[in-house]
Length: 317
Image (cartoon, rainbow, N blue to C red; front, side):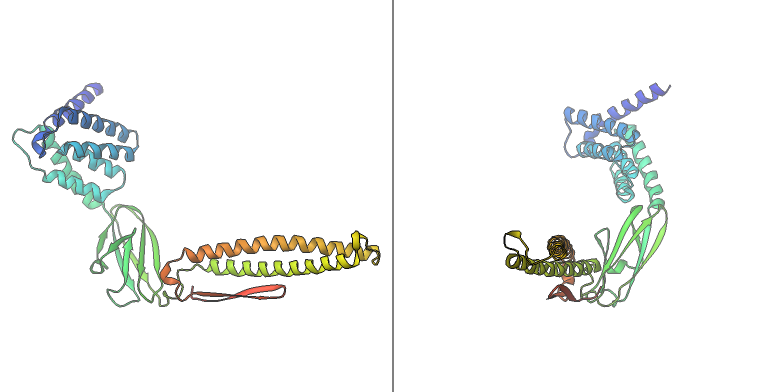
């Protein structure tokens, strides 16, 4: 019985695709219909196997070729499996709006009915955010959801989104940027309140770790310079007092101490120098990758003294 049902399903698909010319401006060729039929069946197999992304790719290609209610319905179902409920509902509604013809196959009529039911079900499943922004005067904040702009007029109202993790961000001139990541469930309405505080134009985009990393790097580099200077002094002493490495003027303890100082200075100068450069490099990366608009009022002033170094920063973070 199961095999017979599957065979009938394939026959319906073939019949639907074979008469698709009436629903398109250009009559598809026999090769077009065969390609679309193959893509459609391949997409259904992939969907049954749990590979929704590959299924949607196949359904989209089949629908681009034929553009009939049956291919549109499969595409909408694939998008649902992929979690793209908004797009799926739009595709389903397009199927319901497609004009019918008295001579069209029954599969087209049934696809329109199924698409209408799917669109109705999705209307209740698509979640929404209600975004409110406080701080800047009304209408001055720029809000995005997953990078897409939300009109100021839509703030405080239902903003439909696909279920899953959504990134909401608000910015305004003279205010710190506010970003919130929320996870939205199907059929829910989630309020998202963002409060912008003044000072965003004075370096809020530069992460604090960049300043601390740069400061630690400068200190390490300064210490490295100090030990390098001391090593140069030891070398000068050795060259003067120990010609040909014969320290006749020193007893064993003094000679050992001089050698230990030589080795210590080399090791610390190299090690601290490498650590200092790494810290400064990390700081430069953090500052360069910060939002350009936040860097205008951020300043770092390094300073050095014999054997020590530091930095002074002017910013808000």
